[in-house]
Length: 251
Image 1 (spheres, rainbow, N blue to C red):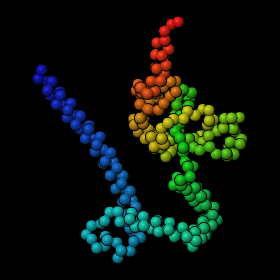
Image 2: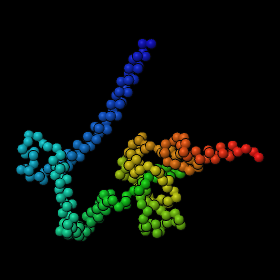
Image 3: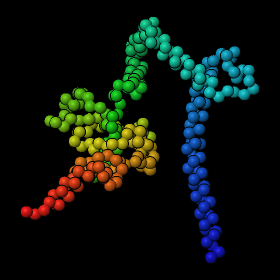
Image 4: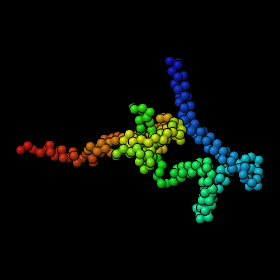
């Protein structure tokens, strides 16, 4: 009898600790990543700022984030200048110079295409999450399905009415690395979850899964929504017909 209160008290303390850990850990990790990013940008930008314009020269302590602010202003200014004719001509001249360098032109061209694809609003990024059987039959892996485009690979390998689609299979817990595969469209099981939910599933190693929409069937037709009894309005008309037919007197 004397051990019951002690066990209950320790259980409550453990639950309090776990609850506090769940609340504090994401905040601490987010603050650490943000602070590290600010320090990394400051270490790159601050050495190029003249001493008379740097607040660190007038204050007894360094000002974190000043280099990040300067970098954001410079990037915005470069974007503004590039939008006009003179800036566009300068950028085109610089790109022509880079295009003449054997090694640099390949790296620059690839990086530019990646950033243009990621930051553009043309819908050329991954459009859906799916499943494919990999690495063997019966084992399914999560993939991001790219948009269907006609490429040389499609021209050489496509089957009739079953084109190949580029899919990216990310690795856990880093979704930025993975494998690019071309899979027949019929072998891909498309999911309703968003790209963000799929990325969370990958990063958390399956611990954080998105909510599942239950399918409600009314009159033989599936309807998206929470699993519950059909509404009275949906069943009122068939019910009236049934009661009318059953209530007719036999002749």
